[in-house]
Length: 162
Image (cartoon, rainbow, N blue to C red; front, side, top):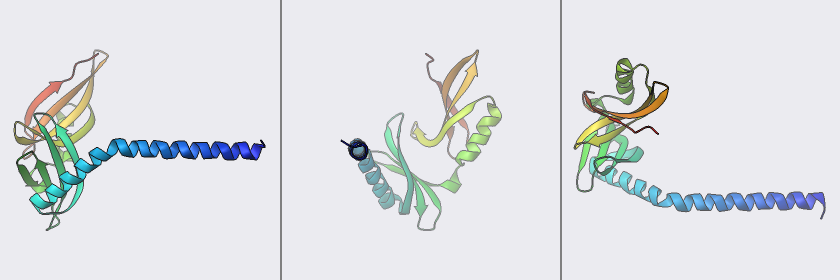
């Protein structure tokens, strides 16, 4: 075989491997994508959203879906979807993630925020702040929860270190 044929064969093998990896990824992710579409459709129906911009599962006390979107008045709206009920709140009725992060960093300036997202704890809407702190040369991870409406501190959970 010539060098050109080896090159063509190599390119074809790489393309086939990439197509196979793509198919595998899609097959693994399709159940999650289906749940996401169902949650968005339910939020649109329940809350009267005109569009859903973000949706994700939240698992703490129970498994729920959080859907962010815009209502018919083009206002940012959040929907917490539980099995049998839902909670719909306007973004203006609570604090934003940026406001929560600012308050958090004022109280814990040595922390490094990894993620801030909406959730539900004890049947109340909350902001979850996932962060790390280095103490005695050991990096420790925490979850802090703050009330959605006023940003009042709820509770901290420390993850075990290894």
